[in-house]
Image (tube, rainbow, N blue to C red):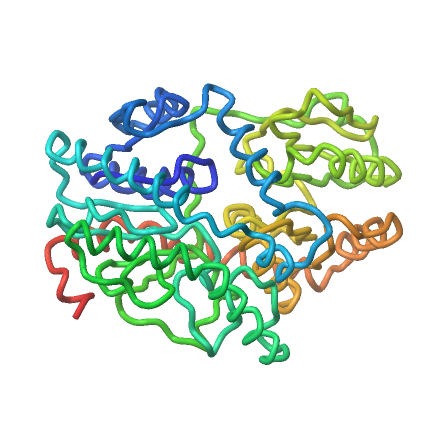
Length: 429
């Protein structure tokens, strides 16, 4: 199986989780990587094949930091609402198409050498080379399930609008998305058709019917009760990798302090907004509790308080079992992994699917949603105390955690992909 993820942690990590199960069942797992990721996957038993630098332009070793800074420069950070941020997105079809062409050309060159039986994509748009190669393709979604397919029975993806809210706001947001996407979609559709693929559905950047879609979202949060999905969409409660090569213990200087233990992470991308990280750290410094902080690529540019310990990145799946509460940006991996361990969350979304996840947690009563830029000291500290002292919520989350860990749905992913590879018609009309 050849995995072709977007080369950022939020997309690579779920693919690692799938690959671990694939390897355990005796298959090969090969990842297409760039220089920044080269050598980082072999510890999981995963083979790597390098995307040539001439094919896919990447920044140097600081690529994670620079990618985050690109998002910051695009207007995704800050106090603007999700719909305002959507309006701010510059429609730049040529830049968009150029990147896709590089990735598509790189994949086209790799495929004859790798000769996969199955291609697993974790992308935001289709790569024609994958469709044209002629083997079954699986699409792994590392984003909110609302972003897989736009269904008017549910809120639009990236909106942060409630499933029980005003549907006039749903329609307004969808229209803004279409206005922003129009030029990009037309240019991309022309490129896909020019490559020999079928035209894309209007405003959709992939053809859903061509793939088996797998995604992770706990049953307790999913939207299938209001918009059922076709048989080529399969949900898993999580896509959590194992970290057998790592260990973690609460540092002695933090373990000796009083108070509950809280994990604070704004993710790889949002953590580069140093001014806001400083603001939030200053608030949390006034809490009687202790904090483990995932500081991000710009960790040297701010200082933690005495009730905190942090590093550029931490082994999140090893930290979560140890803490009592999670303060998060609301990324898919963190939400799924926190529910796996039964941890309540305060979600402070910054962009994209984070808004949807934060609102869903709030609506379903598994956490609270706060504005990452506007929340006051009083709000944040009060919400921390509220969730830490909510025994009823703790019991509900413990029950969810037991169900997820007992069901162990991810154990079935390898067999699912194998079945799909042998009989695609079973899933796709």
